Amino acid sequence: MTRTTSSKRTEADKKGVHGLRRGEGRPSPTEATQSAPATTTARKPGSTQLPQLNPKARTPGSNPRPAGGKGREPSGSQDTGTDLIHWLKEWRAKFFVGAATVLTGAMGIWLASWLGFFAGPQPPAASAPPPIKPIKDPGHLPGRQDVSTMAHGHRFYAVPNFYFFQSCGRPCWLPLYQLPTEQSAFVTDGWPCEYYGPNRSSTPSCTLPPPRRKPSELADSADKNSGDRLLVLCQTTHLGRDGTAATIHNQVTQGSNIWDMVAVPKSYISRDSPAAGHLTEVSAMQGFYQAFGPDMWFGNTGWHGIPCK
Image 1 (cartoon, rainbow, N blue to C red):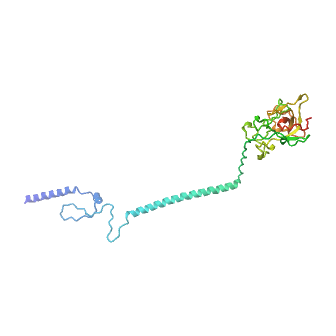
Image 2 (image 1 turned 60 degrees about the vertical axis):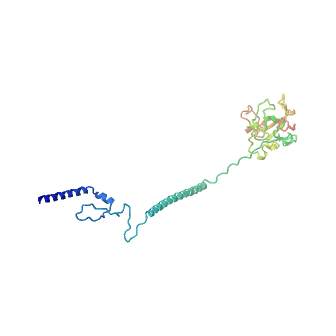
Image 3 (image 1 turned 120 degrees about the vertical axis):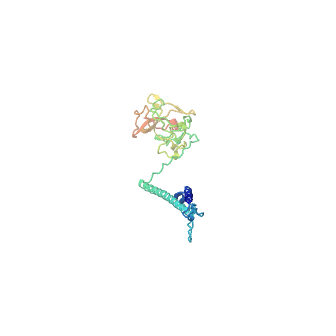
């Protein structure tokens, strides 16, 4: 009897130990919660089997529809709402950028208009002078056209004419001298000109006309008004008391020893002239001084009956 009881106890102990060893493989409470729901099948009293998981347990993220109710909206509806919010934010940012650009431009125009109002009207741009074309013809023959009158005993105006001396590089300017000879001191430099034009051979002389010269008179050697007019005071053929004025020849072998005394404005007297400060001022013409030029280059009109005293 004692042995039988002991054997039963031994078998019971073995079964208990066996149950505990089987329990060692039971999942922890955390693992059981993550891998399976709390709902399990009931265990029979005295059974040593582990609780079995519900074969219909939901997986993480699943959302079973409750009994007698409607399920939740599909996940796509949430994404659509998010996209709409992002689109509204982008549209609002673009709207503010565009509005700021328009406002800045409008403010700039408004400020510019007020600044222009206070600054006053701008002066008109200076108009460019009309282009001057070089002449094709050599000019006109010297003669009556180059002088204001042919009446004897009267002073006259004369314009230089180099029709028969074109090798000087037209338009030419006429050197004036202190005495009626080319060996005396020169008085002017680059003045007077027969006309004004763009010819390179005469640069820098005879390219800048006086302010009073009309554009229609420029670069026109056939028009006596295109050249510089000088007042002829008198004429002479003598160099003082002891000599004769120099004879001048042109390129067609014409010669003349008549020299015209002219009135030269002080502003045209060259600063480099040895005669500066030694010229005689014209009587009753303040600011004008006496100088001589060959009548050959003043139209070659000859004697006018106004001798120099």
